[in-house]
Image (cartoon, rainbow, N blue to C red; front, top):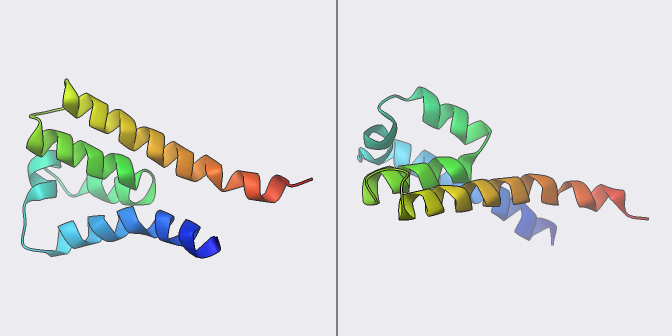
Length: 90
């Protein structure tokens, strides 16, 4: 179970690193600078990927792009708060 949790936390960051290192402009087209993806790498990596998808595929965070971003936020908040319940066992 710990391995699944570790993979769930590492996977979005691995995707961001691959998007950054591979010769693609997917992140730079969505953000225009390297600062926001770097902050997103540490704080909300799934939301960062979701926003990049919304900007590149759905022409911004409106309509279906907004749904993708909201799902990214929900996944990030679920992964962050899901780990806290492990330590509160009675």
